Amino acid sequence: MKASPSIKRRTVTSSVLDLLRDRIISGYYEGGHQIRQEAIADEVGVSRIPVREALVQLEAEGLVVIHTHKGAVVAKLTPEDAVDIFEARLIFEPFILAKAMEKATPDDVERVQSAYRDYEKALLAGESPAILSQLNWAFHIALSYAADRPRSLSVLSTLYNSADRYLRLQIDAKAAQTKALEEHSALAQYFADGNSSAAQKLLKKHIADARDDVIRGLQHRGTKVAS
Image (tube, rainbow, N blue to C red):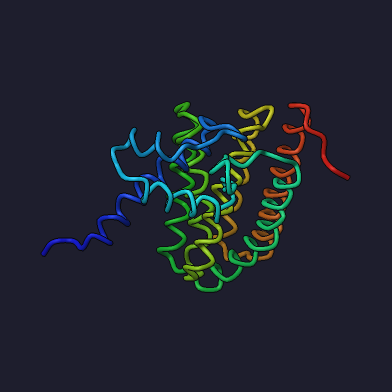
C-alpha cells in the first residue's frame, strides 16, 4: 500500500523541521539569522511547502519569529525569554515528576537509572555538547515518563528545546555538567526510593540554578537583564 501524498509531505516536513531545529539549538543559526525558504528548499531538494510548514512549527516552539515582509528570523536570546522558559519549567516539571512518582513501577525506576548511567558514561567519555545535551534531556524525560501524560511531555519537550540554546551560554560548561551529574544521581536515587518531596525540591533547585547560570552567561555576553 502506497503512502498518501499528505503522509509523504508530513515525513518531509518532519525531516526539514529536525534539520532547522538542530541548526538553531546548536547555534549554527544565531539569533537574528534570516532563514530563506528558497535556499533551504534548494539545499534539501524539496518544495517550499514543507519548509514553510516547518517554520510555522518552529514559531510555535518559540525558536523563530515570522515577519510579514522579512520572513522567518531566528529568535534572539534574551534574559526575559530565558526567565520565561526556566520559570515555566519550575512550575510545570516538578508537578509532572510528582505525578510520575505516584505511578512509577520498577520498570520506570530502571528507565531513570539507565538514563542516568548513559549521561554519566558520556560525560566521562568526553562526548560532545550535543550528545550530552541529548542525554541530559533524555534523563529529564525519563523522570516524567511514568506520569503517562503525552500532552504534558510534549510541552516539556518544547521547553527543553528552547532551554537548550541558553544552556550552551553557561560560562563554565564543565562545572555545570559535573554539577548536573551529581544532581541527576541524587534525583535518580530519590525516584528509586519513592521520596517525592525530596525529588521535587532538588529538581526545583536544579532548574533554578540553571536559570541563574544562564542569566550570568547572558550578562557575560553584555546583555543586561531588564528590571
